[in-house]
Amino acid sequence: MQARSVVFDLFGDYLRYRGGEVRLRGLVALMGAVEVPESTVRVVVTRLRKQGWLASRREGRETVYALTDAAWTLLNEGRERIFHRAQGPWDGQWHMVLYSVPESERGLREQLRKKLAWFGFGPLSAGVWVSPHDRTALIRAEFAAEPAVQLDVFRSRSAGSAADRDIAGRSWDLPELDRAYAELLRTYRPRLAGYRAGELHGAAALVERMRLVQDYRRFPFHDPDLPPELLPERWSGRQAHEVFLEAHGLLRGSAEACVDALLGAAELPAGRTR
Image (cartoon, rainbow, N blue to C red):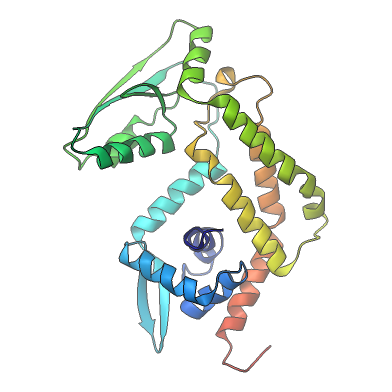
C-alpha cells in the first residue's frame, strides 16, 4: 500500500471520527501497523504539508496534523464516488461536454480529462465526453477559474436503446472493467464468511480493511456508474459493490478497536504500558 494513500485512508475512515487530527507519534503507530516505517511517515507528511493537503500545529513538543479544507473536499468527493451508486431510473438523456484547450496547455488538458473521467464521463470522440448523469455543473465549477479551458455542454437523446448501448460501449471499456470487478469478487467474496465469523482481529483486521479500500478505490476512476439498461449482461460491478460494502462493514469493529488501541498506546509516556 502506498504511504500517501494510507494517510488519506486513515483520515477518511478513522481519524475523521476521532477529532479529525492526530499527533505524529499516533500516525507513526497507525502506519506501522501496515508496515510503513517511521522514516517514511515523516517524509510523507512533510510532502503532504508542502503540497497543501496537511496542516500542522505545535502542541508542546509534539506536532499535530490535520487535513486542510482542500484535502477534506477531495476526500469527501472520493468517498461519495466509492460508497454510493446512482439511484432511480435513467431518463434517457445523455449529458455531453465539448472542450477546447490550447495546445500550449497540455498539462491542463490532461487534468481536465482526468476530472471528466472522475466525474463519470467517457470519451465518445476526441474532445467530446458523455455521461448518463447530469454532472456538467461539477466540471464547470472545477475549471471556472481556468480561462484557457472552453467548455460547451449539451443534453440530448439518442435514436433508441440500441444506440444508447453502442454509445456506452464506445465510450468505456466495459468488458475490461467487468473482468476487473470479477477478479475483485474472486478475491473477497470467499472471505466474507471469515469476516462474519470475526476471524480477524487487531492489526490483521485493520490491514485487511485498508487493503480492501485500496483495491476498490481504483474503480470510480474507470466506472461511470451506468444505469442497468446500458450495461452488459451478467455485469459484475453491482455484486462487487455489494461485497465491498458488506466486507467494509464487517471489518469495521475490529479495525476501529485496533486504531483506538494504537492511538491509546501512543499517548502513554515512554516506557509505560497499559
